[in-house]
Image (cartoon, rainbow, N blue to C red):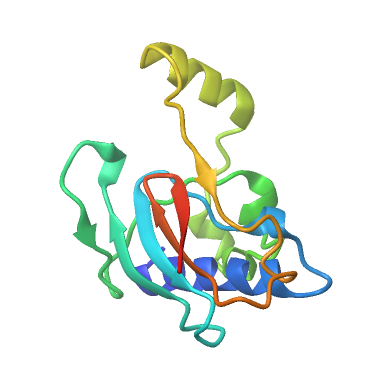
Length: 147
């Protein structure tokens, strides 16, 4: 996927979290990506400071819109479901099904790394329910409400 497509996927998911028919479960969480979210901005302009850290082994760098990145997702989201519409627009020939069950893959990864890191999530449980301005900063699979 290009950097532009990655940002679009994240923006799509944010829109879905705020729609009445959407789901707060669609909020975009990712390993190896970090970004700022400002719900005060309009749809398509809520994500800024999008950075990537390939395999979490190097320094963080800005996502370059025209650069191509390898992205891993489960097949449900990769099909454009749960608000991740841009995933559904990716050409089939660019997708590879590994046929790996993601929960088992995560358990194997965590065991190889000596356990899963503890993370703490601080964000509104339902962004649609709050009338207060919400700015969320997602960093290394963590989010914190900033006001």
